[in-house]
Image (cartoon, rainbow, N blue to C red):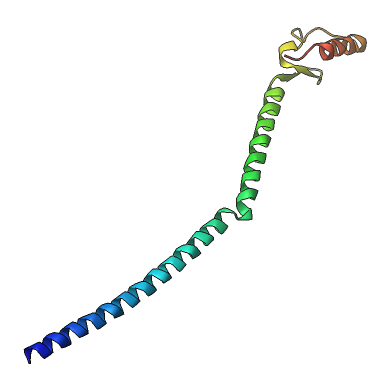
Length: 118
């Protein structure tokens, strides 16, 4: 009787091992399927159109920021005379009390415009 139980126990163990191997094989297959699906989703996520749009917008914003900074720098170098004319800041008329007639003002403005910017 002891031998019968031993053989039955072994057969039961063998059967259980086969069942566990089958389940393990299924788990491996399902895990591989999930890994493939996850890899595809990750690839699709990294290639989505919004990323390209965001990158393009960032580049555009940087360019515009640079242009605005240059414009602000240029504007800060200008000064307005008492007569309402705009002059480069470094070439502003130093003697505002002096009355210039129209011809002298035009001549002075033309001289300022001919000077090369720094």
